[in-house]
Length: 422
Image (cartoon, rainbow, N blue to C red; front, side):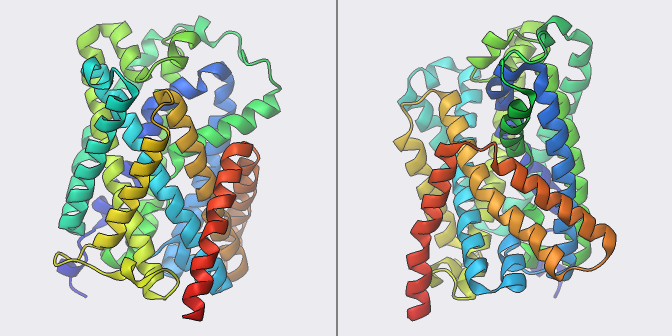
């Protein structure tokens, strides 16, 4: 197959991983983590190690099965059609929930620049939805254009984010890290809760495996992009989020719609805050673009196998899976609208936990797939560690998000059995 038919090279695939991971989580997580103080470092440590183990496992799976669909393909090839459907359905749910969360985060960044635009919950929701549908439009133009936008937005957010984290380290007030665990909960409970939240910043590590048929030299490129992208995004995210916790008091962070921008403003003035809010907005656009691309590519692969309705497999004149793009963005829109009366932080946290709950099943399936069908002791040990981490993370998700996730997965089963009967 010629390179012209495979529009994503190593840098575009790496940008898809980094861009999907560094989005709303990096910039809004300090607000949701503020009640736990410096104890969040425990959660970050566990999450970063678990993410690297997952990245190694998915890199091996991509070498074994370099097919469009990522986690769906791995589960289907390893365990059969029904497990493949459950993973595809669960992962697709996580994608449009992620799109909703990132749209909310985009509204928070715009509010830091133009407060009047997000003065009410309805106007804030509208701002997020505008960005959401602009990215949908880019993806409808084609995969190559979506890849170019991803590469551009990734560069524009990673460089400023690293610079902010490194420079701001010199301005940290260590008194903000005292007490170490202000929540009053046990360190075990804090670790479980913070892993569930910090995992959101690592979701997307598998992104390059999903559009495999659009990646040049897929087995080699996807494996390299997955591990490299996870390492870059992990280091940048942990550095920036931990630094922000040391710059602002916990009560200020907990009520901030753009905590990183507020931290920059407290150090260098309102102009710096607005500049960082602009970086956050660009970051959210990049993440929206990446997740919109993935939310159409994965169901397209499942639809080709007859596991999801065939409409998902249809492409427009530019080769883009238009139905998948539109229906995913519509569902994300409904999620935002139905919960718009919550505060930005509460809406973001709910969407994050729901998306994370739905993503952990594909992670569990991917790790189990390599343990079952893979080879090589080092990679199998990594897969065992990834499986243990995923099971541990489920414990911190919370009852509400887990029940929503289970309910949405069960709701998809009639579709599968109807398709099998047809």
